[in-house]
Length: 254
Ligand code: IMJ
Image (cartoon, rainbow, N blue to C red; front, side, top):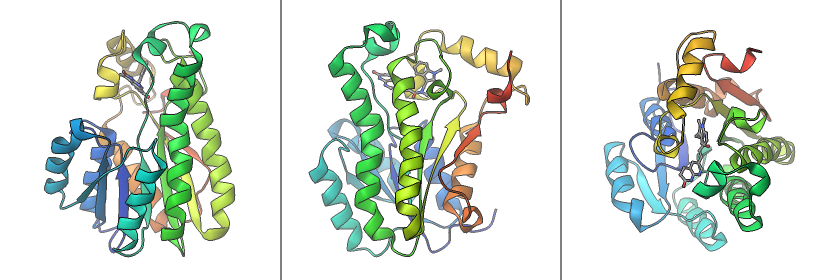
């Protein structure tokens, strides 16, 4: 490909390790000539993300997205370095028990935690980043089919992803007049750290391979290439959308 993001600066939240979809996106953005800023959540991830950032000549900052002061401090730092063209939000969390037990048994604190980390963080980051994107930009988040279908063990995360996808539409409506586009990629299952721990995950991967039109699973690099498109001027007419990058699995009825 050829420098689709040349001269652009992208902020990428949610790189946890080398297998993160956010890291695949960071690599593809770098390949296309973007300048990168990565964030990590806390001390546990600091060294890993600083190492990955060094590989991509990226600036690395700490940002716990549940803390408004952290989000504000991050944007203050970025303001000093010029404008921002793209934001990638690749963050989700629910208590492990809330993924494995029936959705009907989700506790109030578990429900709120999943929504605070996985949904409100997009709203907080979009609001804080918008002033740095004057003249236009692209905000992108990651979703999953569990937002619109019942997927075993996804439970409270499915409800949170439904709220995330609705948030994409309302943010797109609010920020569109400022030239800021907001979209989501709904990725097929990928064996990241966020998925490795899930019961029966291998069965889900086998089901996709058997039924998806392309008869294979999703490669993180193809999610990343779609992210490049959405962040680039090629997608200048696309906002408020959920793009499925899932080998076509989502269209099948059985
Ligand atoms: C997660 C749970 C159940 C089924 C799942 C997933 N499938 C996929 C995922 C089929 C693809 C991964 N995914 C799309 C997620 O959004 C994962 C979110 C997540 C994962 C964990 C694991 C460890 C933990 N909390 C988590 N919170 C959110 O403690």
